[in-house]
Length: 504
Image 1: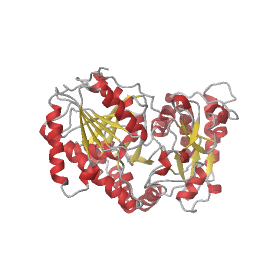
Image 2: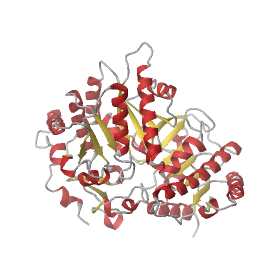
Image 3: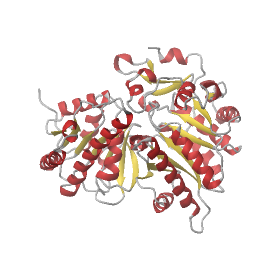
Image 4: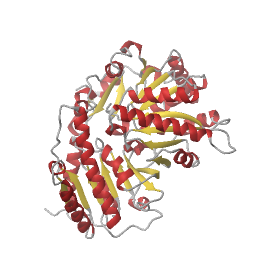
């Protein structure tokens, strides 16, 4: 595996750009008409890098009206499209964009809200691409007549070790592999049963996923020489202006949804890109974004929030004396390791395994009843870890793989919802993208929430439900593919009132 320092050696040093510089640039642009980014998040883990923003799990016009009335620079919409087939994903994207535009036009007596659209997806390149940005662009054109010039593709997630250098997307190593980079196509994520891919070079990934509609050579690549174009200056605001101009100049040829990929290694790179994109849009370019989690934070000029403490997680609410509920659905390697550490360390926790084979069998309903009873009983004395069996049942048919995933997710949702209605837990942690989406929308019946901030720096999100049966219960959205082996135990320890290490 190559060393990150060696790959970075030919490029300029990063610019130092404070978040307030991006925020002030946006404020100047929004002086005449406020702009809100509508983030269509294909699973709920995209909120892990932001704070104090509204999130929706429903997308009727009135839901958007509530969100826009919060007066924030962005609103997240939980689409959960990574769990849908392409036709369903397309229909959902279209519906969301149409309703958002309708709500923006319906602001009583106020200037119309100007919208930008973000298609938030996976930092390891899994998801419906290019379908989702295609549908967003087509719907915007149909509803407003506005044509999209470029689709800016930024999967990088430096907080979680995903970086793009020289147009190639990498994963940073950890432990003994720290300092090394692995091209993402060589990782387990590229072998995803539904969204697998063969290319780590982003231009070639675009060609692969578009089946040649966008040739690799047609993709605009904003490499670090462009992102950091002002790095030879004096370290003042003028350096970022040089970079912004270089980025906007490079984007100038974009037309008809030209793919644009960006090198990103640090938060400063994301902020430099944000300034460049703002300059390009000032010049009249119409852009959509297909991005990883931290892009929105940088694009709206938000500071990186420090991780929340346990006390902050319960602020304004009286925590229940019940145990907490930790729900684990993800099957990636890091989740399995995190689950092992948690079960090894948390001596007071009751472990309830949901056997996937039984869920797919003839006696699934009776088995589900038994599982709910076991969880409710255990919550009376402490935390409960509910996880699906670690044997991943896969097929060669992507549609069948999705069907199995939905069956399992529906069972997890039923366990959470029936438990909530019977004996509400102290907190809920959901591990895995599809799992945390379905638990939020259906298990906890969250329609509107506020993303309060991260429980771990930049990678694990706390939602505060605004109303409904889960109001007052901290909900932790924990992606399957982030964190180190101790992360799940660390977050649980913050929230639990019964966590006690196992004795040797």
